[in-house]
Length: 464
Image (cartoon, rainbow, N blue to C red; front, side):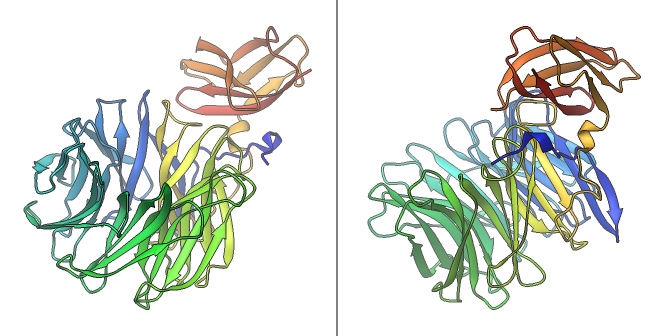
């Protein structure tokens, strides 16, 4: 399934080919920073939001330029209990971040272009008992915004709320299919007629289905659809297509196995199914986001355990207009990565945002990738991280020496991972340009050597 002999992670690569910017960047601190939403901004840069405990517990927002360089970041600690933070840029150029507090109350914060809070509000228009969790937000063409949420009550249901530019609630409505035990709205998008499409997961009889809600501009239901593959399913994201239909992505339970495959559903304007497709391999693969590309095809991001280098990697699937695969890409290292957002960038390439555990500063970091139109991050993605690290002798018997470039005597930490991704040995406070590794308790086998400091270096070690 995975070949650790060919660890091919390109870290912090940046090139420009035919005016298409490409890079791979991480953002965060020593704790856990998990991106759950992102967007390309009007100035060509990117805004990313997610959970953080590195810089105070709350919604962590990072703004970058077009090349992925951080312009500012801030943690909004008034939203410490956030389940799935969201972010969107309004027509006035400012941003709306959504989350919740420790009691499950919905918090909405308006942020200006430099990250300062303009106002913050507790949305009391949605009654909650066990807690109400805001899940997604979208800007609207009238200058306001809309959100989807669910009430963690005895009978949870999906809510849509519409707000004006000043955060005044214009209406809130609830939706749930008949017989539903739970309905959780996971994404919301404005449609071309000013209405909304919400994709959620609905649970009935202990089994999940993808549930799609189509409303007009006032939140009145035009139609709803349940998509049931015959097994346990989930719906994560939906977008309108150029013909007025919709594309929906989620997870379909694998046949005679645990976990999901990528599941893509194409509907007509009335929500009736035109076709469905699944993508994935022999192990669980879960899709999180879908976007319609300029060529009429679709871009899907998520995570894969079937392909790539690590325990799970970012999985990017590009299809044509009828769902046939044009190409797939994986990104990541020896641990966990996930792509929670994807889109076609203004230069024709693609952007993916999510989380990485393999590289960066902490336990998890925000992960932002910008590819060209073919899904490539750099001209040469072959083992760029391993070129600056030498291990000799390799294979080793009793000891070996790791050599790397550290002219400023920066402090590094060395981690040794076994083939399952578990850290089996750590050496701290390395400031020289070499470190000796003794066999000691290392059994014969294949290991990954990782040096983490200002730069992350990796290479493979064989122990005899």
